[in-house]
Length: 250
Image (cartoon, rainbow, N blue to C red; front, side):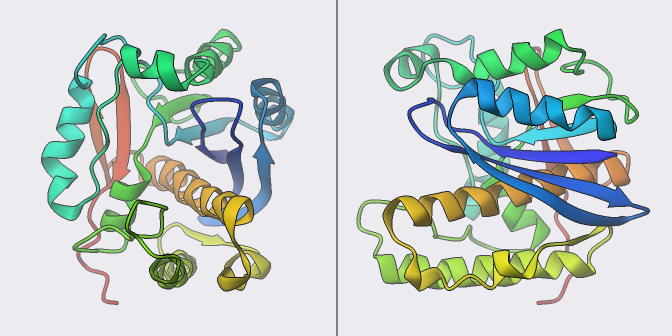
């Protein structure tokens, strides 16, 4: 079984990150990492792994947006639970998407559905499946945090603060080697000297780390057959987030 995490940009003008994990009897191995821009390249990358086995895909992006204004019902569910951790999501609707996107998120979803990926049906852990996740929420639950990490660029947030938060992020992801299931991440990924990265290079590294969390969320969901995941759904979407790991002592 393979697990793919995608930190997907709303537009092909910006790059997206993909990470693939392969299961070895409860020990996951990160086997490939990609930074890609075009929708065609993203789809090609995913389909190229199908000969190796079924794929569970977790995407940090809203896959179906039908509301013209306001927020999606499922996003309101996420915010009700995770706002106190500063790990909610921004309102998204079709009016916003028309201004910032070329609809590549929806195009990716339906391209994968056309080749047999399961979406919005009863989860079958033996089939190719695609669903949404929320990286910030997964991080606070996986690592038992009271506040989300502040590594993303934001007005008023200094680069030095972001570097310190990135270092925490690296250490937390390293802890996944001791989780169930565990994952092995190439040492060069988590030992990267973050302070040597700026601008585009820093953003690409951020996306790779987020995609690792997405991939692990898919792996964790599959391994525990959903018992250790928070599953939120409405008529149009499903979001999977690991349950809070209260037993972990950092």
